[in-house]
Length: 409
Ligand code: ARG
Picture 1 (cartoon, rainbow, N blue to C red):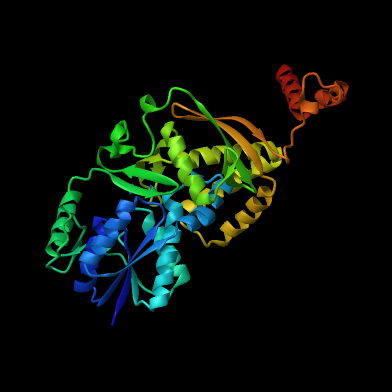
Picture 2 (picture 1 turned 135 degrees about the vertical axis):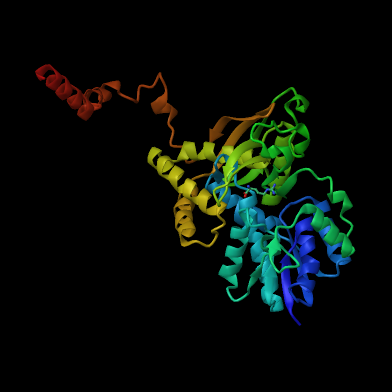
């Protein structure tokens, strides 16, 4: 018996893969794996129902807590960002592939399948993890390969063909027909693309947003919240300790109510395509702001400057899905060392779509009111005089040389 483990979202593409695995790829046993990283419960239920309708052995793996502690929190520590977007889709892919690999190993599967197309980033991220963990198991990407034509060649699937093919195999996806946007959702963010959003100059319509209120619908009074962090990880809201999953979920609802977390960017995809992306990521925006504010308080100037470049490398690796790259471990060794002092509290004002840091405190603050204050007597200002005289010495020498030469010529 030949077994394939299919990474299954329950959407149209991956549903089409199920009968394809049997008819074209010769598998007897299709095991579908849906990994819950915080997508809508309706999506999980739909995946389970469709898997049942198409007669697969189905598994839903609840990876939400692991996603927060092992993926979102490392992203916070690294101020995880790619071109202005708090990386969310990208960090969920390795975990999804990892869970599929666990099932594949357990079942002694003969192959993997996934529904990624040949245009996007996810094919890189998912296959990389599969190849790292189980190099012996081959990977099939039916959507990338395209539909087999009568003459033996392959053409990309059209949406209509997919709907017809699914219907011919007993799956009613007619309601999928009028879905305008392509959505990817996990606890750390919701990404919306497709339709007219592909036009870079088309303003996102209000109805694409599900987690964040439009400015006009947000409360008129601001709300100030206190976020507690310990060793770089968020641990509390307004003094109340919460586990990671609860904290992210609560923060998404709270900041979303104030319209915080919308991001609209042009994103350079791994293959070089520029794609217009809209995100909503209220918790990520607030928690990253809190983390940055605390680092600014406790880190030296040199640490901050160096860490910015480390963070950028980390974000790039994470975006590329290179979750097991030794460079990532190296960077995390530095990041982790710095995080030992990133503990304290940050006060943030949420109001009308903005998230503003209005205060911060930490036992590790490299700040002395005694020294910085205008009224301070501890700081002997005469100590500065010699330093000021020498300030920019080399540049001043250059200017006097230049002037002398101009006079001489
Ligand atoms: N461009 C984002 C990334 O690769 C998200 C892609 C998926 N988004 C979607 N709406 N289908 O990280």
